[in-house]
Image (cartoon, rainbow, N blue to C red; front, side, top):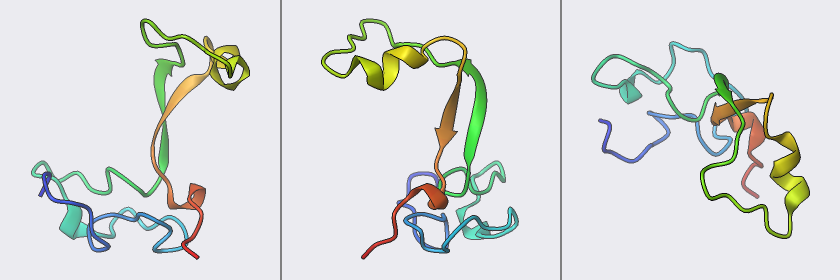
Length: 87
């Protein structure tokens, strides 16, 4: 289960369903602990502050990340709504 690549019956990836799925969908992708849709369906805000990793250097694109360090929280996961459909 957990070591296998995601397939359409296990995860909502690459705009396959043109949006989010019901939480009960895709039971074939359940983990050994019964967790479902751990990738691909929605983004999740965490309690972690958005900070630089140790040794981070902004480089030539300082405006891309450095201004956001501090109060904003980390966003993790993935959502089909944020991916461009295949053309």
